[in-house]
Structures are given as structure tokens and as C-alpha cells.
Image (cartoon, rainbow, N blue to C red):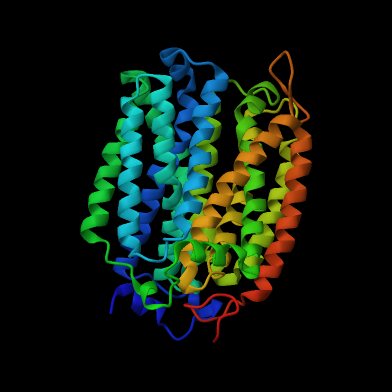
Length: 432
């Protein structure tokens, strides 16, 4: 019996009290570290483009609107590929699925490094998005397969530190390489690191095929349609879409708002991101452990309250001393982290074993698309003044607060369907 099957056939999940004392096995620690590092390469590839814009636009003679398309085409292709892959996501060993899409992602990143024209870069970003957009859903499916519900908060806490690590480590290193060797260098760095990660996955990650023993619909399109129309799954999809609104509405204008509205010197901006990232890295594992110890919904409630308070403060600030800007940003990201980790851990129990991969793929696609729509809406809410300041930014705060309250209501409904003590290998409504 495979490692995955052994975990999935556990008769029950420990209570929150005993879960807190559970430790990871050596192999489980390896898997968590591997998935976190893999996520780091995926997120870094997506985020590195924004700071490279100042070099890319003159190098390829493209306009700001064309550069915007370079950034957004990744999200749209990732969203489309997730939907297309959903029908097949539960028919193969997840290790093989992960290797296939990760190799495609690295190939797309290599094309970015080799691109010498605008059309070539657009094509490269489409290829990267097609493969990279599916990897996140595979990672979460693997997490759900290999770890019981009582441990997923801690696992999500470590895996999600990849986002903060990309800010603290990846982006500064990428900018340094681009300054030294040109904008192609960061993509070559990602390919080199990713190749090592891929070899480790191939050599040391065990097959993850426990889900193949479950009855899986062999018709890919019917499997996709059945998953997409399930009433209990629709609750998860709607909650995922609402969760994406907050981050994607605030992030695109964060640097401009900090410089022109809060009075942060452009040379101090990296320090703001670094302090914020370090706090998020520290908060991730702690939030994960608390999610398993005190309850995932309770942790999500705390994160929502903190986020709403900090969004209200952040979006209404004027010129502010640098230390206070750092503090507000750090607390805001801690609040976002305290929402993201427990919500992902809680919603990981929604899909049944036979449709877990399909559910995760559709959910990841909805997150990408909802984030894109949120960015567009935010662009129509705010107004750029002649001095560079961002007007009506507080209105985004109101929208984010409203979305957060709706998300809290949706999570409370999901929480009622997923008690903290339940079998590890079933979804909502499955037989116990």
C-alpha cells in the first residue's frame, strides 16, 4: 500500500487537542519543504515581472499597456488551463501530474529567458501560465491526500510562506541579477532552481495514487461538469472567488499608494516589503499551528477582524512616518495570512476523494479569474492624480471590507458542514 493510501485510510482524525501534539514524520517534513519550495518558484515567476517592468519596456520597446498584457496574460491562460485540466485531474498519479506540469512550467520560463521580442514574450507567458496555473491545485490536492484534516493548518502554514519568501528573498535577488546581467537573468535563475526541484521530485517523492482506488468518472467532460455543478462545491468556489477580491484589489496600487500618498521614499520601499515579508514568514507557521489547535474557523474569524481593521486604517492614511507604514503593512499581511491559511485548510475538506483534483483545479482557476476581475474593478474605482497620488483609495477599502464580511458568512456555512473532528478521506455529505 502506498504512503498516500495509508494516510487516506486512517479511521478518524484526532481532536484539536491531540492534533496539536501530533508531529510530522521525516517523510512528511520532506514533502512539506518540497511543496513550499516548489510554490516559491511558481510565485516568484509570477511576481518577478512587475519589478522588471522598468527594464523590459525599453528593452523590447513596448508601451505600459502592452506590459500590462504581459502580466495579465499569465493569469488568463492559467485560469483557462485549470478548467481544461479539471476533468483529468483525478485520473492519474498526482506525482506524474505534478512532474508533467512542472516541466511545462520550466519550459515556459526558459522561453521567457530567451525571448527577444514582445510577441515572443507574450507566447512565453501564455505557455508558462498554461502549466504553472495548474501546479497550485496539484499541490493542494497532494496536501489533502497525504495529511489528515487535523494537520492541514500547519502544512498550509508552511507552504504559504512561499509567498512571503518570494518577497523577502526572491524579488531582491531577481532585481540584483537583472541589474548585473539583464532582465533575462531572473528567469534563468528560476529555471536553474526549478530543475533541481524537479529532479528531487522525480527521485524522492513517492507515488501519490491512493485516490485511484476510489470510483472516478472516466469521462473527463462529465467529471468536470459533475464537479462544477455540485451544490456543496459551489459554496467553496464562491468563497474562493470572494477571498481573491481583497488581495488583488489592494496589491496593484500598493507601491504607488505608499510612495505618493503615504510619503514613503522610493529607496525605502524595498525595506517596507522586506519587513512585511519577514513578518508574514514568521506568522505563517504560527497561524497554521493555531488553526489546528484552536479551530480553523476561529482562526479565520480572528484574521478577518484584524484584516478589516487594518484595511480601514491603511486605506485612509495620509503622509505617514516610515516605521508606522511598516507596522500597518505588517499587521495587514498578518491578518491576510490569518485568513488565507485556515480557510484553505478548512476548504480542503470539501471535496470527496474521487473528485479532489478536479475541485482543486476549478478552484484555482476561479481564484485566478476572480483576481483578474478584481484588479480591473479596482482600476475603475481609483483615480490617478497629476502628482501621482491615488484618489479614492479608501473606496477600495470599503469594497474589501464588504467582501470580507460576505466571505465570513460563506465560511461559517462551510464550517457548519465540516466539524473539526471528522474522517480524513471523505468530503462533505459523504457517508461516515
